[in-house]
Amino acid sequence: MKYLLTLILLLFTVPAVAQTGIYYDMERNGEGITVFNWTNLHKEQVVTFYFYTYDEDNNQRWFFASDAWSGKQSTGKLHITKGVKYPEGVPSDEPFEEDVVIVGVPTEVGDYTLILGEEGGYLLWVEQLEDDVGPVVSPSRPEGIVDDTDYLYDRAWFFTDTLISIGGN
Image 1: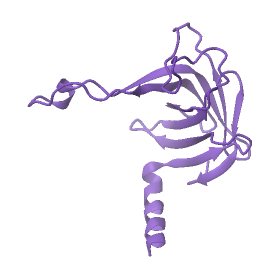
Image 2: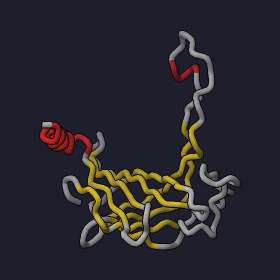
Image 3: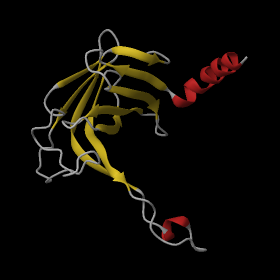
């Protein structure tokens, strides 16, 4: 009965969530991408994805982006968070926004190109930012640097093995 209920919920939530799927590269353990293709309020196609990998010290990192989607490709800025800062401030009768500081700080780490794979999944390419914005803070590295020698940059990521696919590509 639980399985039937889960299946029914998945079928009804697919249009609302519009999740394309979760993909990985069999050759690289613990790395992958979760992709959502959806239509925004302006009836524009958008792709939002979460990309996860490890740094040189084997600490997990999470990246995200959300930009226009042509149906086959998207380009834009890839972000990482500096980590979560817990809300600062004391609750009062004022609206929440006036009492506390926003908890997450997204930081651009590169320019990405995401391409729909010919046989399924996605291909990802990440380049360094063109303008020199200085060191980028990463929650997983004590020194907090994602530098130009990081293997995140200038290489192809092949997430073509399907873990979960809902609604097709």
